[in-house]
Length: 238
Image (tube, rainbow, N blue to C red):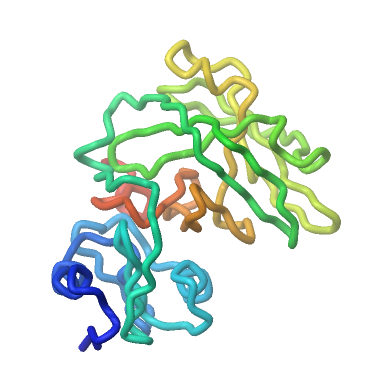
């Protein structure tokens, strides 16, 4: 049950739709997730989910584009969301495309902010959350150490990897770049993408992200996204 006494009329009217809508952040306090239309999305740890909704307790939380509803407190935390609603199957194309962004993106690691970029690019592909490519110049000097790992993307070309190093903290192959991208992704040359999962915190337009499921794709999941997300076991053929 939801105590709607602290909700605005509009928010209260949307509470039922909020519960049953396609939101990847509808998290059960016992670690289960509403996977309706989200079979590729896996529950993340309670600490990140609790922090994501701005609450200090570990509890169930759900998110809407224009406000956050906290089930533990039974109240709505009104919070502007500059990211428009997007469906990863219906709104994102295949072949993948490259799109410029003009909002702030940050990455924190080992207790420090290692990336702050006002702009960059995002790669959009069906069933994937966006991958964010940020200027190399926006990364803290000395954090990226070349790694010999390589991979091939059918849309972007061959990727080269970096370890992320700060003090005694090391994430092997935690970031990647395309030194010679395909023509349709030429804009991401001299840009780098970072896996969100091993980072302390990553944000897009002031909103904390969750990592795409699995250990290969590097998309960032934000609360404005809906639809089935690729990455978990059994979804690689999507």
